[in-house]
Image: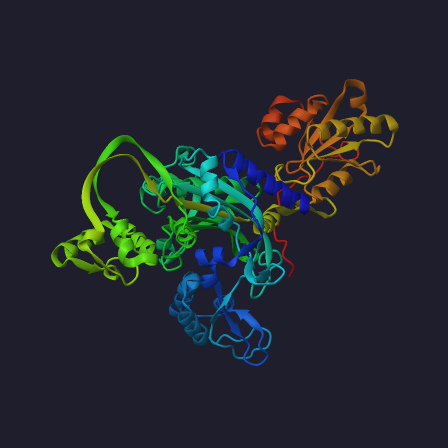
Length: 598
């Protein structure tokens, strides 16, 4: 499992970080409170919880309601009640505490283990608190996501990128959430591996130069309009059509949805059991422009594995306001522009005479004036001779006179402008992807005497890429097998040599169980002409190939730069046999997929 997870992570870096030329950082897991206050996590990073009225056991409220409604769906219901339940399930993620409490009472939800009454839902903050330093005088938290480490380092990342937009930064690492009720194996845990991308872009230009590469990708889209309709089924849609229709907000968001789809398929997720669900309007944060979740169907239902969101410029604006540091980028115009704008020139001398120590505060307030408020302030100063700043900006209760500031509309030539970049954020839960992949690649192959279990790992994520079998337990066969294995390792391919002497068929079955995609057999022909047989796991078909070609061909197969069909077309086929006999190996289609314990 560790090797499979590592291979998924490595391919994620190759697929996104390398191919998109992203910057990469590694931030601290312990985060000071001011960072998470600025991001809103301290106040709003909560789930709704209920307690058992008698023993105080805690349960996540939406999960209780979901389980109750799904149980009711399995019972005889009239059409109206069934439709009501479907509508509540569709809106489950956007229910407020009051609405959720009303639904829990309506459907008579009880504590699952005891059947006792439950409390009204109330928010529970999911962050792990800790004290920083030997005195414990600095409040901190274990990071609930990796993204904030990228946002606070935005100025340095922008500088490293040559002060140019757009660009992306990525981080992979452990995140921590104090889940109310961890469950479902590795699907809901308190510590998990997260991989996140923050793509910084001009908010007024969210086109993407590589959009055309994914524009015609078809995927199951579950838009918010479909979710609240009577149909409630995702629709196979081209990304281009969804962007043109306004279903997906912009090209950059669509591009990352397409790239996410390609990544998930490459690591072994079945396309027909994966959908992209759009967040309902009230489910999204107030600042978000559009959000989609990549959900995968498993024996536990639909599991959210990836979130792709257009977060607008909220995060950088929030951190800039809290830290009082610039989080902007300079966008150069193609041609200079002439604009008329308000120029504010405070008189330091006059302001200093009157306000003394508070002069800086007054000048800062004046410089923060919007154009509209600045013109209103100018009008009041000209008519009354004085004005209170409190009515025009967040500068405190100060009364200034006409001589303290000059407010004029001036025409300026601009070669560019400073903007706060918008952010497109794909966020991946590596553990969830791993579990869903295990379910999707597991199947049972019917044999002559017994069923054989198989993990159909793609070559990219398989922990062992190839096994090497000497046909007989003889030194001349074993020596060739060791030589082939060493060449494979030199090519960066993990291998296993199986010299147990059992039949080839049993050795094939043994490696199929652990998901090895390819097997090499050293036989009598190998000693005569340096050729070996190469078998593919899922089709059980074999070819005859010179052992000198083997590392290169397998490297291309593992990197998915070629397909088994293309390799078969290039090299002669080898009749399949078990134990060297003429009896053909039976390789039937998969008959089952579920890994979940009953």
